Length: 350
Image (cartoon, rainbow, N blue to C red; front, side, top):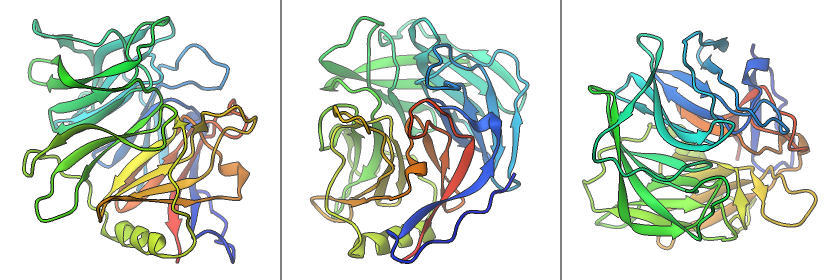
């Protein structure tokens, strides 16, 4: 159901989330939201801030038609605090997460052509994490993910986190984790962005933002020119708008301080972060701020754009890039308990 958003107000900060859809099926947080074949697949999540048992729903949103439906495929996994990625243009792979009693590192896959959920199996050489939740999975190629984040059981939290490469084989319905030599600070509820460095010899870096009391991103992998084959979605108009926004005088040069359960999407040379929960002792910890990390020069620059609308405070939400537009999907609002069933589009005006 389409929802008309309010027009930008004079003197506002240059951006607004414009509502485009509203449906109770979308009301959840700590879910995954993945674009595949022009549709958004929402898997699992918590339906309220006090819920302990994750949902087993898979909900599909058609951004072109504005329609929301619950997928009737059997075997949809009960998951929250997981991540997901499209594979082979056909499968939606859900990696790790919380099932209501433990942290997992297994892979469940939805075959979108057959409408069937499958439990993929580990190969004999698999070296899995002890358990994953509030982690990230970043596509390096169509069949390879880089996994980073919290690792361990319910009562275990390590000071440092391992980095894993996860190889997926839809032909045999198998997966295999390989632990990399590098480690990161232990993080939970962070986000990740695969970005190119500027200059005549560009390379790719995987950066982790937030999830611990640190204002600066951490490098979780780097690749020389030509090693990364993954093609990010084209968004020329939104990229141009972001460039104009950061060149205006409306934002401050400040990065997020100790943020978790926020969202992040890569748009050209920019990482766009929104919302989240601050790691402070303040009573009002849920944010509605927009942060843009600009990699067009070295060193990269942060830009912070605040928001006066408390109704846009979000945590445990997702953003998803499609058709040159950035969508905001679900999450919990200002009280940290009430899930929103709203989908919005980021509008920029300079």
